[in-house]
Image (cartoon, rainbow, N blue to C red):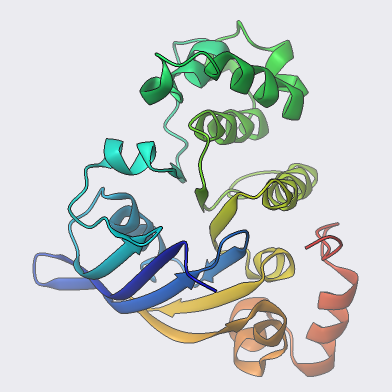
Length: 257
């Protein structure tokens, strides 16, 4: 299947320090792909390069187009959206205004209001808090707002950087449930996570990043059963991991994935 996004030998350096080294990845339309790895492995740097936040070398194609020279705004207009790890909301602005900003490149169109209604439908709590300042929201609500703002751009590829970070287990379940639902609407998802167990349970395909390079890749189920992944990232081995993967963890299961 033709890739929606394809990176080949993508590298990013901070001065003389190579943060990402010749990473190649493939995201098929309608799929969930995860990149897992320890803190400092280069996951966020990789997303920054894909979104145009950081300069990179190598090849990068999106929907068949070379996008390496495109500005961030141009990538967003073509359907690339990023939900950053720190969410980067405008705390003094209302929930509604934060969402509307997500459709900045579509403001002259009439359907962005319909998109706003769709976001409120998906996240009822945001509708309830539409006039509240973003700074007053809980951690889970802020993550929902960051997701909703990205969806206002009507993305074809949604990139999520550590969406479960700092959230309570029940909220993590809700976030991953929403991720599965989004895939069912045709949105492709690139999920960067330290929570390897949850990420592999929801993804179709996975990459393991170590010190800026791809150490392992394969179908998510196969990675979940790989002893190297189990011992390094899940704290499980062999049968224990397979049993954990089958029943899910913390309510994040594979149903519908």
